Image 1 (spheres, rainbow, N blue to C red):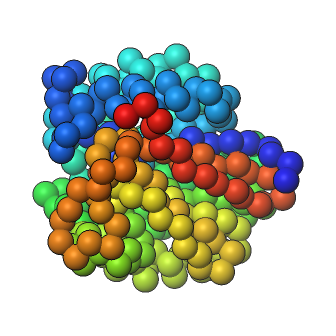
Image 2 (tube, helix red, strand yellow):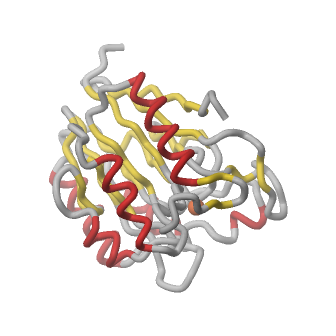
Length: 251
Ligand SMILES: [Fe+2]
């Protein structure tokens, strides 16, 4: 497959104000830094997508990601998760290479970033405004293969506790997607685990966290001992997509 562009997805960084701050055993700035160092071996990337929970309820943590990526030659599209402050995130990540939500053209593709957060809730939902923007952007770029990214999974994952905290009214999301023929992938975070499924031509992809993982398939909340990770996507000029997960080797 000819590769026209490559994307790095990182998610669920859960950074704290304190550089030594941790989440369920992971010192989150350390694990993120190690993931970025290891992904540098697979660079260059044409875009970096950061699919939510950049911080663990501490917006002072945004400065760590700014510092790590402010020299990035690739644009960095950031989305809020339930542990972010959407307003503070948008303020922190508005100048190049950063942007919050919106969309990016990446080679012959387009990537659209949605805000699925609901203030005060762990579960997600898409507002009418976001659904309209998705529809309009897919129309505008109907001649480009498209990737749609959001924090909350728009599918169930077979994990009882986590499936109560996904995207509410996901059928409204899919009804917009189904009106267009150019969507090739839907990317999400939130689940702290790798996921791959399909809906027709669309690959539905979840990535592991750069922090701690959740145990796949568990009815109740449980931590998995898999290492921090990320996802890489290879995009062809004609709308094909191959993807792989990376796991931090030195952990
Ligand atoms: Fe998270």
